[in-house]
Picture 1 (cartoon, protein in one colour):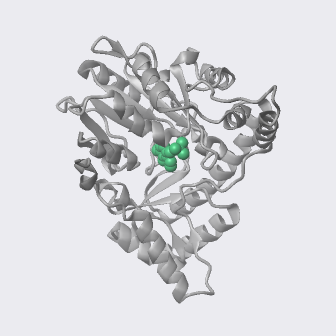
Picture 2: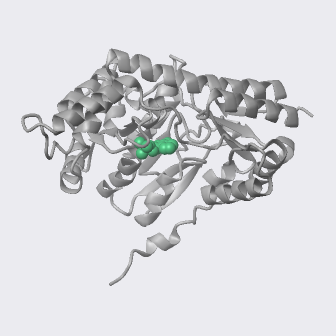
Picture 3: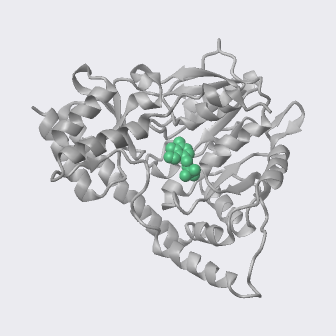
Length: 394
Ligand code: PLP
C-alpha cells in the first residue's frame, strides 16, 4: 500500500495556529486586558428570522410521515434551484436548472471540481489568495504557477499571454485583498481562457458585498463566460450559513472541452460521490431569497459594511494605503513603516491589543500586508479602530 505522497508536499498551515498561540500567550500575561479580534473570517450575526422560521417548518415536516423526505436529488431540490436562477436573472444571467448544483458549501466544491481535470494541467492561482486553491491542487499532484497580485496592479493580476495555463482561479471580491475585478478586466480573462482553451474557476463567495453597481457579481455577466467558466458561490457570508452549510456551483452546458460537456461530468461525479444537502438546510437557504429573507440578510450585510467603513475611514485618516473595505468585508492594509506582516501583528497585539491576520499567510506577495475583517460587532470594531488610530497616528 502506498499513500498519496503529494500530501507530504503541502506546506504546513501555521497561520491560524500561530495567531491562536500568540494571542493565548499574550492574554495569559495580561489577564485583565481586552484583546479585540479583527482577524476572524467567520460571521458573527445569527441566522435571520425568515431563515430560522423556514428551518423550523422544514424540521417539523420531517417528523410527519406524509411530509418526511429521505434521499433528495443530489443536485438539490428544484425549489432552491429556482430561487437561485431567479437571483441570477436579476443580474441579467439566464441559467437552466440543470446548470445549478446545490452543495454543502463552496469549499468542498472548489476542491471536488478537480476530479474533472487531468493531473497534467497547469494551474494558475493568484498570489495572495484563499489557500484552498493551492492545497487542493498540491494534493492532486498538479503543477501550480502564480499570478502576482501587488500594489502595482491593484491586487488584480491580468492575463499574461506568454503564460500557458489550463485552469485559472479567480476570486472576486478577493480574499484576502478585498479587490474586485471590473467588467473589462474579467472580459480579458474570459478572452484569454477562450484563446488558451482554459477553464476559469470563479469563486464569488463574497459577491453579496459588492455595492458598486458597475462591478460584476458573477462572471456570467461577461459575454461568452459560459463557454469558459465554472462559478462557486455560498450562503456562508451572504446569510451567515458558515455553520449551517449550503452553497452552489454553476456548470454551464456550453462549457465543453475535448468534445465533452463538463456539466455532464460534474453531474456524474456528484451523483456518485455526494448525496445532497439536507432538505431542512435547503429550505433555510431558499428563505434567503424570500422578500423578508432578502431584507433581513441585507440588513446583516449592511451591518458588516458599516464596520468595514469604520476601518477604512480610520486608515484614510492615517494615510495608510489599503484595498478592499468598500465592496468586500476585508481590508488589506500596507504595514506601516515598512514592517513585515508578523512584525506588525506583534506590534499591534502588544501596543493596541488588536488582532489581525498577517498577509504573508496568504502567499509570498502578502508579505508586508495585513488583513482586517468587518465581521466583529460595531462596539469592538469602533474600539479597535480608535486604538489603531491612537497607536499609528503618533
Ligand atoms: N471561498 C472563499 C474565497 C472563502 O474565503 C471561503 C471561506 O472563507 C470559502 C470559499 C468557503 O465557503 P463555504 O463556507 O461555503 O465553504
